[in-house]
Length: 445
Image 1: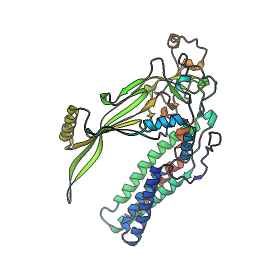
Image 2: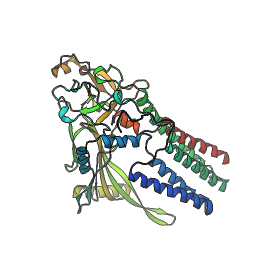
Image 3: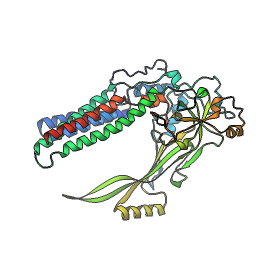
Image 4: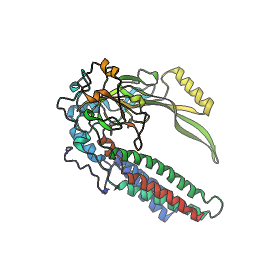
């Protein structure tokens, strides 16, 4: 399979099944829950239909984007054997300390990574990052070469989601008919409220997808002043990149970053009273987080353009890069402080700690919809530029949106980002049906 033979039009309906063993495992478990729940609900207790609803939701969560499986296979076929072996060595779970129960996990797959081979570090023009690469054309994964993908209008995700929605509304109706008086309107209000929230979330996601699909991608060498869409590779400025030290601990550090966000969480447990006595309730609580970045060049093969990372309010780094877990804080002092704060403020006991790092690194694919503005003449002259390259006189910022345009930085090319997305109708139809079903139940109240 190659980019030329890949059909990027998802069509009307896609029969999309999981393509990883983890996805198949969850899908099979969801199928068992669905079938088992329906059998139990029909023969023993109708209330047990909620098991089938949960099963459908599990299957919906494992349904990949309509093009995702094809892009995953293409990525594996296009990646050199040496790169695959290196990635396998760097990925997965490693145990840092048995005594302190410290582990590090690097995801084995990265949906935002390159699908087609990208220019290597040794091919970059470090002396003049504004000029085109040797062949002068766009990189292999640029939309000018591969086109713009179109997700399928509907897929198995829609089927699973609508079955779950129908089951939820039916279960709500059954609860209301059992309690014709009093608080019978609560199920209807809850269903309609959840449907409204999911509809709003789906609407904003659909708007961002529509923006990505409808905005033509510009080449850097001919990028206009305004709000163009740009796709390319992250390359360094003369100032280089960042070394990010998570939570001040050198054990948790990563180099070559141009944008980052780390989060420190505690797994806090507390004892709560119930009608039957007490039980332990646990959840992850964010304690500290930090984000930042530095300028970089987006290079699409035809030229490079400077990007002012910190001006972007919307930064989507996709899947996290690395995660560190431990039963204890990094130092005895921090461990005692964590236990004291959690105990005094919330009456909780800290059982686990977790640090998660997301970000954008040199060499990564990047999608940007931002505002291109002229640079100060003194700035580009200080770099020794003669002003003959138009892209060297511009920089990209993200602090001013335009009508119908929301500035954003996303890790991954357009092909990767759209390829794993669902269509706008898939994002909107199930939650709207859920909301309307909840409103319709008010007729039973």
